[in-house]
Structures are given as structure tokens and as C-alpha cells.
Length: 274
Image (cartoon, rainbow, N blue to C red; front, side):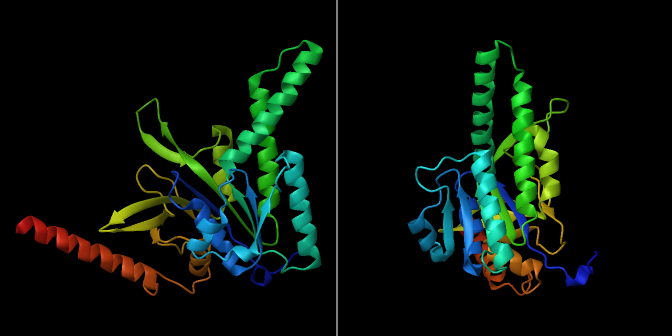
């Protein structure tokens, strides 16, 4: 049976990508300020004290896999099913599922596929094309992302960035660090794609998120509500923009950041004219 569009709930699916230290994990972890989340801690980068210092409600965070448990395609499927069943029983059981990070998850899955493939070659004496390994891993990642995207809760992932150079004209572009075969699909799966960065303004740092294509960087805003550059792009703030309870004009963080930049430029100008 069809459902009216206005009656549908709209969980948010967002991908953060950027260099190390630009806040990707912390931005996503702020989803826990809205309720319970489960984080796939593939990089072992989810640290309680660091998140507490950033104001994240760590009491709402579950971490998968548990110590001593191996991250595999089968274990991720089982974890997805557990979350799905919990949400079927209680729609408020989880507000979201987070992957930290997509880059590390695909590497772990690829290693497992290669191990199985090598065992098959040793047993049969036949050769296996390495492209088959990437194809099988890609299928696994696609299936898992679709399942995460289709959960009745928010879904977020982060990825490292990689630098690509077009051989025909030398054009440089920065994209999520995943295989080229997954790249096109990735932008279709997520509602928002955010490139993260950090800049120094005087004696302070500003964490920023780019949600629209700009120069060498890719971004995406399916909702057409995000500013091109959002200061402090934590998940809860991004959701507020999508729900239109925040705008660039009404957002005190953005107003303060713009004031800070203006004052810093004035100081630098005064310094050069004296």
C-alpha cells in the first residue's frame, strides 16, 4: 500500500569525509545527544574522554564490536538485524547507526574476502583474479549501506579523504577514500555529503563542513537547506538545519564565527598598516 509523502518520517543519512583530525567522528557522535546510538568502531577511534570533552552524551553510545569480537560482513549483518528488531519492538530504541569509518570497514571486508580467496586457490590450485575480490567486497558494502540507509532511524558514516588526479587534464579532486567502483553509488545513497576541515582564526580553531561542490571538493545537499560552509557541523546541528529550526541567519554559532573572522581580518589589516 502506498503512503502519503507528508505522513512519512525522514531519518537523515549523512556522510562526513575529510583528513584526519577534522572532527568527523565527533561530528557524527553528537547524534547521541538525541538518543541511543550504536557506533561501528572499526578504527577504534571512539574514545569516551575525548567525546565527553566535546560535549557528547556518551551515556547514549553503544560500541560494536565488543572487545574480542571480530568485525566481519556476517557480524555487521547480525548487528544490523539486532538494531532492526529492536526498532520494530520500540521505534525509539535507537536514534541512529554510525559507521566509523567506511574506509576502514571496506578494508576489513576486503581482507576477509582475500583470505577466503587465497584459501580457495590453495585448495583448488586455480588462480583468482584480484578484481573478483574487489567486486565481492563492493557487493558486501553496497548491501550493508542500503540496509543502514533503510533503517527507520538516522544513519551516518565517515570516511577519510583521498586525492585524485585526472590523467587527461591534471585536475585534482578530493573524494571519500573508497574504491572508484563504489564512488558513484555512494553519492546516491546519502542525503548529505559533508567535507570536513579545520582552520585557525586567531588563537582558536573553527571546524567546518562543506555541503556543496566547491573547487577540488565534493559535497551534497539533497534538502537544499544547508549553507555552503557550516561552522561546527555536528550531526544535531545539521539535523536542525534540515528541519529548518536553524538557518545561517538565525544560527548563533554562524553569526559568532563570522564576527570572529571579521575581527581577525581587521586586526591583520591594522597590523599591516602600522
